[in-house]
Image 1 (cartoon, one colour):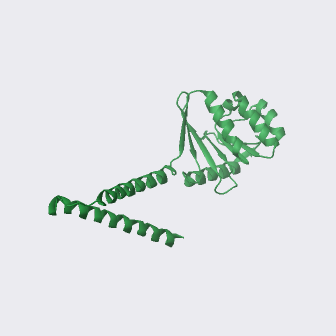
Image 2 (tube, helix red, strand yellow):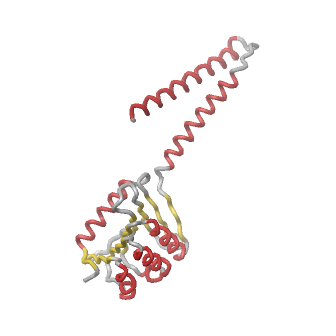
Image 3 (tube, one colour):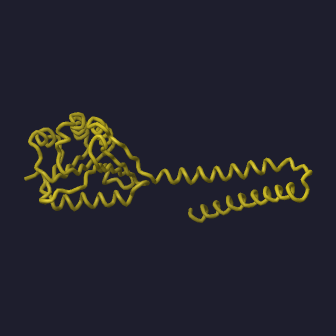
Length: 216
């Protein structure tokens, strides 16, 4: 496949170079050798060269954009809750890593969606550094949500949600930073951040080893 791709690129480059050289030769002929000559196909050659350059720029621009992560700025907590509700709806497995879960207590729509998805077979895990509030435990544990409380006196700085961790190539990672009204969420997928996703999976794996499940 790589050989075919290289040959295709070389073919495109050869055609582009030949067209450009013909166009330049025609312009030199008109400007310096025979200004009164008529070359009806010169404008077509010039148009083709411009189109080829524009196509190349668009191609590489689109190729570059697909490697850029999506970024959202939320000014209100309700905006973040709406994002989380939508984001966790697409995962067969969801892992939430957060220093504290006070935000989840206030996000009733996110809680309802977690319960709904858990009842339909999705696996939810929550990794936190603080003891889980009794009201959260009461609502989420009966539907199969797993809590992992870290045995660490130093609170982790990471705040992220990872979905589809067990499906290679289908993972998505949302990393949060800042506070409202400048709460920023960066979303990575297998194109824009496979290395970042791999690091997040390592953090989850090591955190679960060091944690006490369900806070017991």
